[in-house]
Length: 265
Picture 1 (spheres, rainbow, N blue to C red):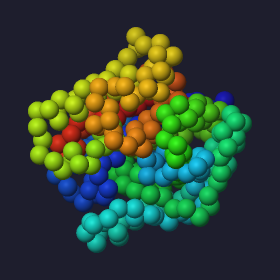
Picture 2 (cartoon, rainbow, N blue to C red; picture 1 turned 60 degrees about the horizontal axis):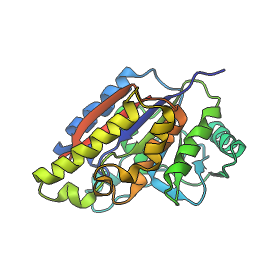
Picture 3 (cartoon, rainbow, N blue to C red; picture 1 turned 90 degrees about the horizontal axis):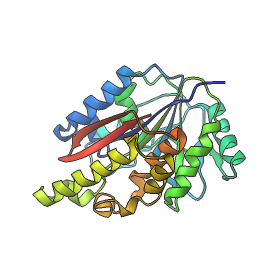
């Protein structure tokens, strides 16, 4: 039996800015590169991206997916980024099978490319683009319990040396990113980050309580300030559903002036 995969939730930054030398992303770039340097090289990577929503969980199944430049208003170089990693159709089929066996309808998409939730962080972490990758969508109901169940279903995956990355953002209020910082906005950001760190990492919590907290994440301090819409948080739910235990490592980076967390299981 293959060992459980490495599971990471990362904050992936604002669009292509981590690749464009933006000063507000220097800490994030360093964190992502440091994470990769300290991991065993994976044989394949499964990315759950905040930038893809479907009625049912959907998995990229093409052998050579293209890139989707799903951001707007950036310099030309942002649309010339290349990340020619191969797909991994066998892994895609195994993900579909694991979900289906758990009673979660899932489908394969052999045409869809990789969005920036995959290629921006992976270009920093694994710049050689030589590790096969697949991408898994969120579901468009944005239901926390459903995404925890998706992660739990992935525990049945048999794939040696797999890395699973939830690519989202622990803080994702676009207006707040570009508004002048205030003591109040900083306190809101820090209070939610502290709740998230305790929820994901505390060894004193029973797993049932951790699960309950994540289902009811909107009750956390300033949750809806930090996530007016939850799509950037839900990859974390998939990660915890898969791991089923406290995160052993939390990393933090200041991104565009806001504290952002990452978790490793």
